[in-house]
Image (tube, rainbow, N blue to C red; front, side):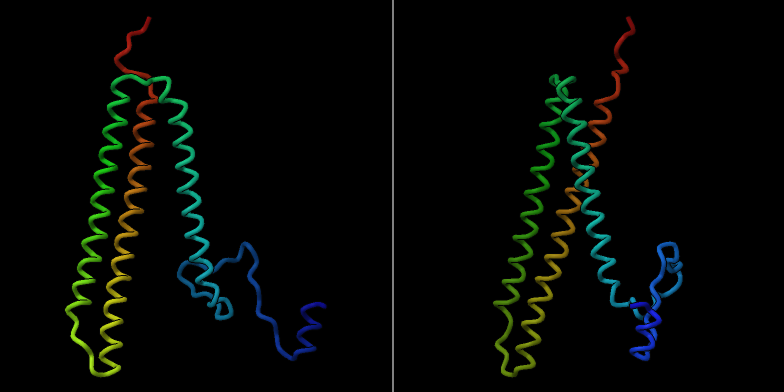
Amino acid sequence: MSDEQLKRQSGTALPAVPSRGSAPSPGSSVAPQFAGLAPLARVGKLSLMMTQFAVRGIGHGAVGAAVVPMRFDHEVFNDLLAMQGAILQRCVEEQQGWFDGLAAIAECYMQSRRANTLSKAFEQEYDIMSRLGALMADRSASWLDLLENIQVDYAYWVTELARPSVTRQKA
């Protein structure tokens, strides 16, 4: 059934679907019939960012697997150990951040006074949940920042390792 036949049958016009090349300009608003799709666009962007992160990680790993064995000496070994030590230190700090945040929330929960009305009880419970949500957002962002930093630092190190040594003399 064509659009025109549907229009005649239902008595209403179908919403216009934009073509591929007719995306709204950056300053314009999305058509009302597509406003409900905004969360899907966010999910798509997040999915794309996660895919790019994974692809970069795989690419850096492949380059590292190709370069490191060719240049594996005591300096490379020391660099790898130093990077692993720094990563371990950050992981310990991240874990401590979780423990500290959860301890603060638990303390707040234990110190909250017993509510004698439903509204006060709801307010106190919501406060605890909002604190937990804020902690999860903060700590998750911090872990992702750590992962991105590891990826960038490793890529830089592998790139530097792949460059021919400047100190070598020409034969």
